[in-house]
Image (cartoon, rainbow, N blue to C red; front, side, top):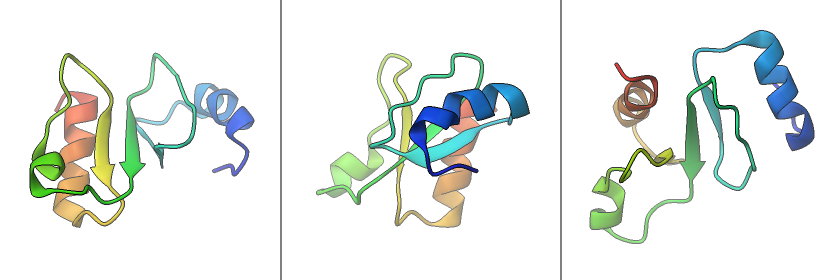
Amino acid sequence: STKDPRETAALALREQPHVILCDAATPLSVAQIPVVFLTAPPASKDAAEAEPQGGGPVQVSKRAQLSELVHAIDRATGR
C-alpha cells in the first residue's frame, strides 16, 4: 500500500498483485495488472448499472456493496 501515486506503478510491478483497487482520481496504468477504479457515487441508477464499453476501465462506486465490488474485480480479472 502507498499513498504516493508516483510509487504505485513501481510497487505494483514489484509485488505483482492479482488486481489493484484505487481511487478514480489516481493516475495509474500498469498493463500487466487489472485495475478497479473506485469512484464517487453515481448521479443516477442508469450510471450505476453501466458496464464499461470497449474494454474500458472497470469502475465501481466507493459506496458499493461487497457483492458489487467482487463482481467488478471478477470483470477486471476476466473471471
